[in-house]
Length: 365
Image 1 (cartoon, helix red, strand yellow):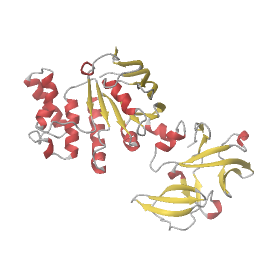
Image 2 (cartoon, helix red, strand yellow):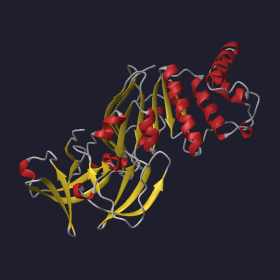
Image 3 (cartoon, helix red, strand yellow):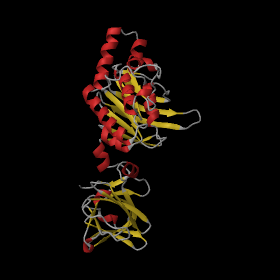
Image 4 (cartoon, one colour):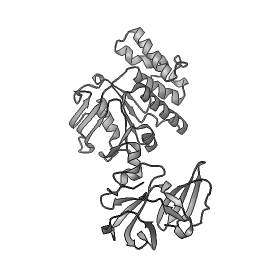
């Protein structure tokens, strides 16, 4: 096991495109850290620089106590799991698991012991004689994990390993990877564009956009205290509602004039007094829009589409030109076309600067 440290690491391509701009952070020894962001944000580039598959343009990358900028991939003591599984189709499961160890000159007894251990841990011991074509998608992914596992590396690198699986298999494999990490205690860096994977797997998450790190923190800290509007809207499903408007303070508390004759009652929102007249982006999580009686409603959007999902109901709403979504309990399912009186949970509104997108206040809840 080993820590991984990025010190001002940059990747600039020959055409001048900046893939990663000055990444500085540390992956703790034994930590499962997730790199997340949309396509082209630099997350896979960071991972490939750790693997030695991309040259570092500037900065220092350290694995353990060793600077590895100029160390060949085979000498970095890392193992990588790819999106495509990359299994040898003509080899059995056992042969796929053992192949890397054979190349390293391990003894037959050592190889057999490691293969047996990995197969048992990943529940592959009953399919060791099968070829990849005879396996399910989940079994193939476990073989790819097992091939990395038998090498006993200092660092595991996982590059969108679940993206080829269906939703049910993805959920099951998330549990497998989390269980595997707990058992091994090995440093893992996991890349995904799926924010649910990031939230459920990562002990900490690095959120990237356009090659820049936006925020690094634990999943719940990112969700509850996003550093900016991008992080706020990227993490969370359904996504955060955002309304732009001008604040006004009155005797009954704060109001947000969202234009078009639409005003939201925010009550005692805790805004500084000098924000009176300031235009902000107001962020509200779907679960923080709560049913209200008509008299106490902060807003009354019109129901457009209702999506019952069993334990809760997603209600798609229209408030003037703005689309909103509320996450409500299933005991009252509203009807499309009706006005739905809602209040904003006390202390749960987020405020963001309209120019920079930076968070202006931390919700109190």
